[in-house]
Length: 229
Length: 395
Picture 1: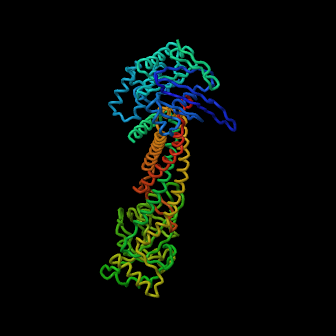
Picture 2 (picture 1 turned 60 degrees about the vertical axis):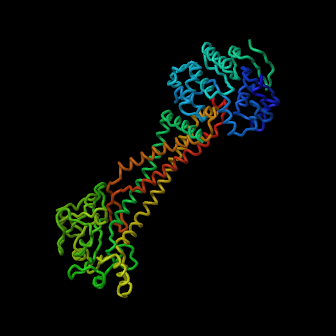
Picture 3 (picture 1 turned 120 degrees about the vertical axis):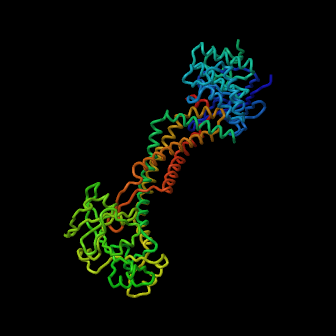
């Protein structure tokens, strides 16, 4: 299977005052197209930083990141913004829906960055909401929905522009077990049936088991890698 | 570009629709702008109304003659001999054999302001027999004109509205002399509306100014004839006088009277606008802070920083525009068209109306827009600089 993402000798350091804090030193990894990876690790291990680097929302200090054969570490801010809009869907722990918008309007947001007509956008929104099983909630605002429903709307928003990569930051961290399993089942479905490549950061071992692979990140290195059952 | 418009539209719509969530700060910002605009409008309307009244008093074909170097009527002296010479000048209109000239004497008497019950200086003008005819837009609306040679006065309707003691039919004492109010005249939108008029000869006698006038009004055949009269006076060494058309004279008076108000208007307007700007900045910074997670989320999704910037700018402009509209409504309801009085350059009370003009309204709109632009600019930059990072989106 071809690699969708390839990190080579990635170094990421932050400066706090005069102190330099290294998050990653010569980190390398590759993620094949259609993979579903769960990244686990203690707080401060660099999970969210890695997600930011993969999603083009942060920059490497050194090293390179390729996405589908293109160097995203060389892109400027504007190019990265466009690249994100076309290639990456994000799913957040607290859903991050716009409270003033309906479910359909929230899902439509990434499509406003495209040249699709209004009717085509509506059609795509309907399809995305159908996939997550919420077509009957299109006109509801986030406060009128449960946490699980809100997260499924967020998933619909993440997939509506048909990105290749889904980045999930603790997607079930705010949900009860049953609802979390439903949401994770939806992610599994997107991976299996639609071929989406998924990278999920989680503290929850049960959630990680829904992935194909689990990577343990500690002190800037993957020190354990195993196939999920 | 189409995508950018859609982004800006979406962000603006979200910002505006979420204003009720920040109602208190937004209302405070709107009120601050409204106050700044209404104070600015108050003084500009006052200045404009005063200017209109003073400037509106003059005709182009009526000459006013003053002592050379006199800035206003109260400083001026014109003798009867000089009056007689000018009455014979070319270009002076005659009614039958009588030249249409009016030697006039302006004195100050006491009146009481109705609103505050305080004493105020009233302009009491002695006018010649042709004085009424020289003022084209003056009409007796109650009673009659005074009779020459008697202690009768007529009173301007504007003065009567603002000051008490000169009501029609009353007998009043001024400087130890008894006078009868026999008529009320209207001279809308002019300084004359704030005056008391009596026969000049009687005024000279009872105010101990025998044979002395302060000004002389002359009806000329045309505006060009006023220029001829200027040359006539200049060429005659007996006439150390200056000649102006009434319009020129009152334009000078208007600029003296209104410049101060205009300066105050803009000084206070700018000071209050700076205050409103501080309020707008505060509101918009709070708005950006409250929405930082939303902005970060949108930036992560792929919205540009421009969308965040313009969305914030439009919100600020909208709040400022609402404040501007509120300020205009306050101005129109509270004082536009209302009558007031002030001390004129002649140290007497002048009655006039607050008057908003299209130019003044445009000025206020521009000030509101400036507050909105500056109030939204820096917070807009802050919004545009919200980093599209997951940590920020999670806050």
